[in-house]
Image 1 (cartoon, rainbow, N blue to C red):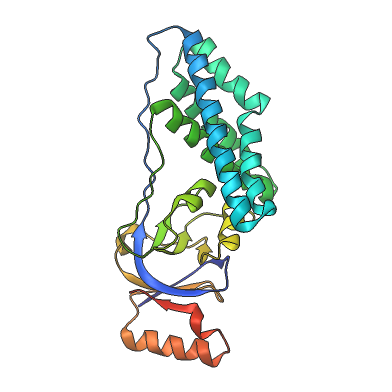
Image 2 (tube, rainbow, N blue to C red; image 1 turned 180 degrees about the vertical axis):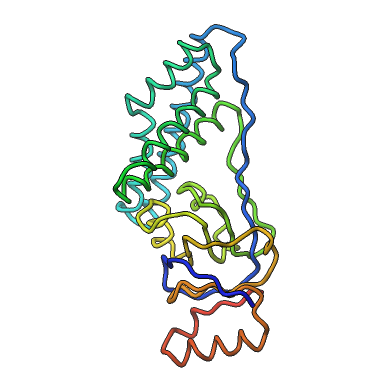
Length: 253
């Protein structure tokens, strides 16, 4: 059994199989073969479609968890209309003759890095929001949609998770989230708390454990990989003896 540690977002305990989530990486064309004005128009059409999608997410979250959390998607909409972000995309298309997709990708890298370099943990966490809105525009440009299918109940593992991904995962099969990066101040963390999803961040968990059983302890931030059945029983008894809710230990291994 391996014991790993991180920072827990929710005080919940869950056990299940680990599944590594690999975010699709779109392959974009660098230079446009057409008029740069057409590329700018393509960007603005994709931008407006992305804003409509965010409005749908806002109303869904509003009905499910309230205004405080739902406002995340209003903020995403404002970021998509931010003057500096929009002009960066337009300037790359106009000045370098690149495609709208490539310009959005470059703007994502630039703005995300700028937020990550800030001193404030709150501002650093906005880096994920930039990546989220940019990925949404890219999908709109390339005619794709975000589909996050899960074949069976699992604890998902990734470098981090974007706010919209939390909304799109199948909540009936999502047992928990573990990230190597992540932040307690992120919008993803806000959504995780609102939807009561077990989650632990800043964990040095590697992909070789995909498919292995694990137990997440949201009270201590510990993760037990490959626990023996006897160890699971001992952990269950320990948690119950310490007054932790019996129903909070969910076994799907």
